[in-house]
Length: 341
Image (cartoon, rainbow, N blue to C red; front, side):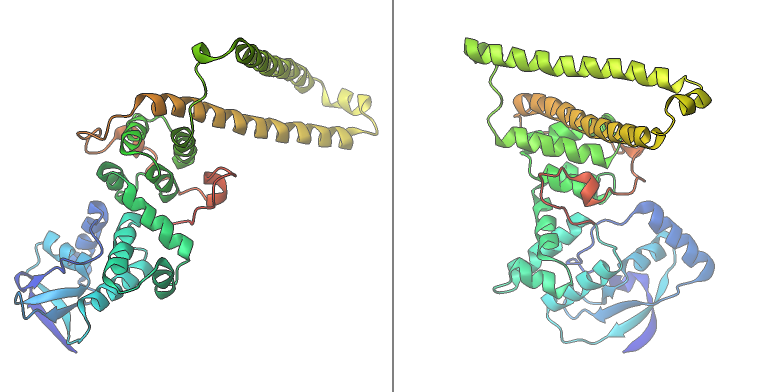
């Protein structure tokens, strides 16, 4: 191993490097830091007998930052290794995974390459090698079914992994429809997008409910009865809301006298009501997602065409900094657990 300062022009990236996306803002921050304080850790390179010069083994981000800072030389550790191309690739994947430097889509492509190039490799082998669960590897591989435009938003961190997994199960046409809706700012965050994509997947994978015109008289009557009963329940809830508002306006001292000896029990009662309201609200939000998803499932059979987004969707960018929801919050109860990113 030798440490030398080498001209930037003599160094080239590894074309089989697992990382493809480098955040421009973060790269500029690193370039500014290097310009001010210098390079804290040398990059690692190897002599490239085929192309000439040196190929980066580790540190492409630092190398890119040097170029951005218009520096002409960089400190390198020159290694002589006898590893195969696949072994070097796996080492690079491991380093980036440990630093969480790879996007979910990059991880998926890396896992796929290893499965394709390593004889007899299975997802379980990849999971064991990189300290991940088999479910984690399989869910990453599912992201390869995303259209290029959705992958771009996932790489940029605008769409979280949980939502991406759900979107990946959709047809290209439905993925495009979801992306258009997302870009318009229709979802408050990734959690809503997860539920919508999941609802659309259910609509896509099952026979759409019968159209009213195709129903028998008995079926029409049953549906009408269900509608009337459901609306009646919601109307009753509205009346209860009026009673609760009256309660909020009552003087607490009078409440204490009126409910003497049972205030604790009545608080428990209201807690149960609040919990039921929360569950009912969640269910109605799910119903809304299914209703909107049904419209897309019926009307968006066209395959993905030209770009449906600008360079940076303004409405969606508002949520780019939101923390990704946990699997328990983001995925409907009927859906298998999704491994966090």
